[in-house]
Image (tube, rainbow, N blue to C red; front, side):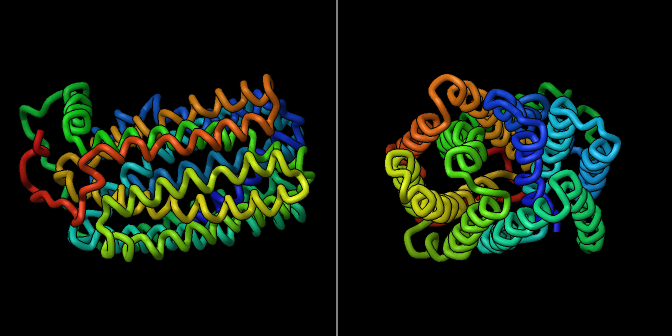
Length: 401
């Protein structure tokens, strides 16, 4: 439910900025950066916090907090005080809670599944997210067209309430973390998570590959809506359909990720998916050069890139969860999100600045060509030789250094 609602806001908030508030390319870049900046601001701290608490209550609390924050957008619109500044603040705070939710979520899954079933479980979770990605943008486009973008955001707020209720119904024996009398301080625990990722070759390569993807992906997304509204002349409903096509690709990738891991091994599956992701991105520069078939090329690229991106993500997350002891899940997940997600605001600001300097179409071309680079991390690394999912004892020592 929250995934469907979030897809609505993913469409509605940029449309409010672009169409209602007449935002510039720079302001669109700042809005995109506001949603991803919390990874840099609080990302590492959330790992320590999650490792010190049961994860299920954290998931519920962050859902409720996001529902309250998003409700302020339609309220401000109704009162006639909606401004781009408010969108920045709401996006920043919702992004902060989303970071906390994400770290708790990734750390909660290994409590529900045996490690040998992680790829299967993550694949199914990605499949549900992908279904939401198919339905959400189309629904968002219709809601924006019928209700207006501010009221469409209210749908997202209500979806988080529904999500909190569903998560509260999960029945799991989740023991409270043991508080040791001599437990290290927050900075020491953050440092432990950083050292594990830095010294473990597989985790370090996955972080570098994903961070490079995030950097160029954020550059692209910062001006993507502007390109579709101003260069292609698409309305809200049509943009929703483009995003829904990406959801179909994501669903295909989620359903095929486990099969690819079984057939080729998680390492080769990740390498192949990342290479195809970059190749599919070339369709967007071609769309800039051939405007008559631009829409068809954008739709094809949207489908192919989401399919390969999700196939990579399912296997990368499963490898990370499998190789990390339970006591470090929160900090390792937070460190990875810090390194990967930290590239988003940087890429978004660069994308917004480039959009104003060289134009939106050329910015998309640069960002799309950049998506060919991440697979270089995997080519000469231990990851490409992973034929089975690595294992570590849940209560065992820290990862091999």
